Image 1 (cartoon, rainbow, N blue to C red):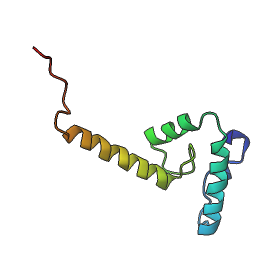
Image 2 (cartoon, one colour):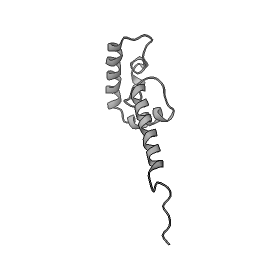
Image 3 (tube, rainbow, N blue to C red):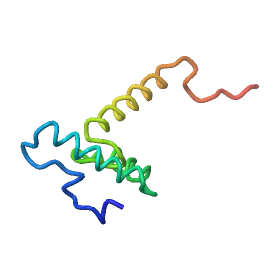
Image 4 (tube, one colour):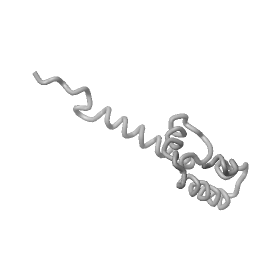
Length: 90
């Protein structure tokens, strides 16, 4: 759906005032909310990782938070007791 809209909605112009940025990002997120591939777009942006713009309904800052949570969760799972392979009963 974003291909029909102007890219300027999804990417910040240089030195954009905060109020204008927040308004533009909310408008971009409304477009994303109606998109049938929003989840795939979001995962693409998280896997790349895309450093700029609104992708899959998330801003760059929101994607950084998601990635940090994923890293933290993965580290917790690696350190959890019994997190290794399941031993065969025998």
